[in-house]
Amino acid sequence: MNALRHQLLLATCLLTFHVDVMGQARVQKIKVYDAVITTVFQGQNYKGPLLEVKDASLTISSKGGPVSIPSKSIKYIKFKRKGAAGRGALAGGLTGFGLGLIIGFASGDEECPQGSWFCTEITAEEKALGGGIFLGAVGSVAGVIVGALSHTPKITINGDQSIFLAKKEDIRKYARSR
Image (cartoon, rainbow, N blue to C red; front, side):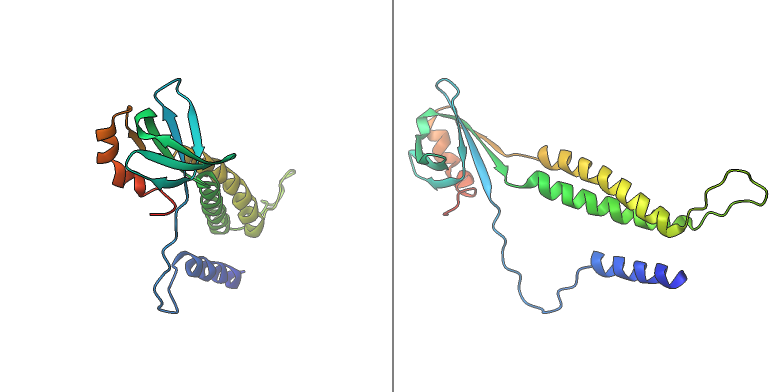
């Protein structure tokens, strides 16, 4: 029993503290964003990955193919990172599961007192598994909420070409081809 706790603690530490064993430089991970462009006229929305930023227009990839939107018709642009809710659910679920395991093992076994007429004996392993599943589910739900509500950058243009040109480099950060 004690050996199992030590092994679990060792595994938790190894998984928590990531060590770059190979000593190689990390590859820069490309973050993929969807642009949601709202127009000045009729408030029409366009959604899709931002492909290109020119001096007088933006090009996004939509379901029907590339769409070029003139800068004078753009009210504002929001950028949403793809998969944020899923990553939040994964991180929250794993954190909750690990916390449930630790709490379950730390609370130890329950033994029934002599002469009790109703009692359930629960081992630390059963508590750890139950706590891990319960807190993992709670953590997943919390992670989905946090991931979905995470910060989405918004750039307001209001159809003004000079504002568009001033914010062009900020917008270009979210384009697939920079």
